[in-house]
Length: 289
Ligand SMILES: [Zn+2]
Ligand SMILES: [Zn+2]
Ligand SMILES: [Zn+2]
Image (cartoon, rainbow, N blue to C red; front, side, top):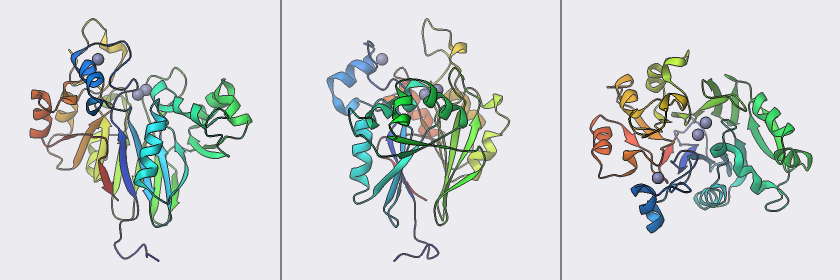
């Protein structure tokens, strides 16, 4: 039996996808990145999703249920052999973050009261809108409300805490998560409007935690030709690198739109991210906390 006080890393995080809600390739898009992804599966990217594994207690969880859920669930179980899947933590009710729940219903896994942790507004949304409401009625999922800022224990010395962040709230509010192991902690914020709209200073947060996986949807504000980018606000990577300059922490960008040049490792933008001491999330990246 492993003791939690002997310095053993007890919680492991694994990145199961890095793309924005629509994934790469994006349906109906024939840009070079999407065309290359269709031509070669090695260039495809699942929607952003984080797996949590506690090998000592043989347990694992997932943050968000994406449209790529079936592949990501398989990847998590392969990374955590012998572990029991103990539930899902949702960030918000945009399509890339919860629609994978369809796989829990009668037509598919027919899950038995799988714990789905979410904010009160996300729980309310799932209870009152079909087809999600049927998952609740059939007891495929057991909704558990998370109170923002309140530490939820995953195991001895390991916890997850939700932080409310500003983000387009058509259907629900949005949370980021802090995941703490016995040694280290990770800040996971895949979707947010602008750092400046948030009461919490992001620089302080990213310096507090050993690892930060943050919204890097677009590289800069010129990226989406012909679309008003003020209507889809995200902290662009070029700006985040200025805000977080010189922190000397493991900070990686995720939630990458198909248009984002950092998806191509030979791009000048990717090189710039690395040169500034940041990283770009890769499917399969792991951290021990
Ligand atoms: Zn998203
Ligand atoms: Zn594309
Ligand atoms: Zn969103």
